[in-house]
Length: 258
Image 1: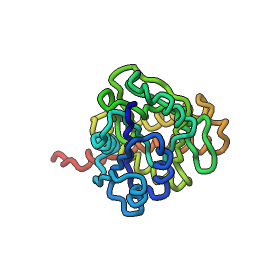
Image 2: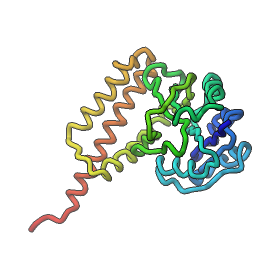
Image 3: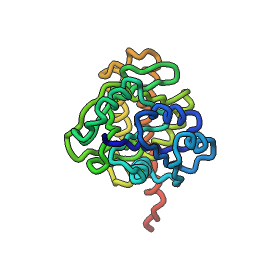
Image 4: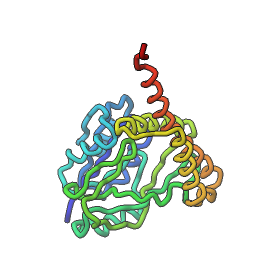
């Protein structure tokens, strides 16, 4: 039977990492934790579940997750974030296919988000993610901070059961993440040299809101669905606005012709 290495990256996740690691018991044959120099009890908690804890200054989401994969002893990787857990149904699905994992190159599963006080059944759902994959057939890619598993083939099977995502405990937590992730996203756009016009913040943000709240039926998620959709609008608007402001600051700093 193929063995599975669970790979986790962490930073100051003492409130959430234990539930994540506990959900891997009976599924993972080893657990790899790459920690970004936490200054809380994250590593102490992780030591209850694994001895394979590596400290590494944060390199970027994609880079950090690929580093964790490189530490794995087994070919099959199961990747979770600290604020995620395997549902009981998903555990059963993984165990059901574990002895024939090699029939496919990767497995994807839906992710359901708990937002402040309730589950979001529409806004960010089913949000299917590849999280179980053969490291010789796939790797972490995408654009920071929106990393994703890139599979070298179309041999991907969907599993039943959800990744349970405990994203934001409060609006304040969402706003703090929004500021951090918009900064990372803006820097990635700048690095790629992508052209951003004055209309981009509006068009991209409006489309994000309509996609979540209208087309994905986010309005059925009640007030939490409205707030999540509005803050997603703000996230995209701020990301592109930061790029525009950066470009204008750079142009103002250039010496003026005499």
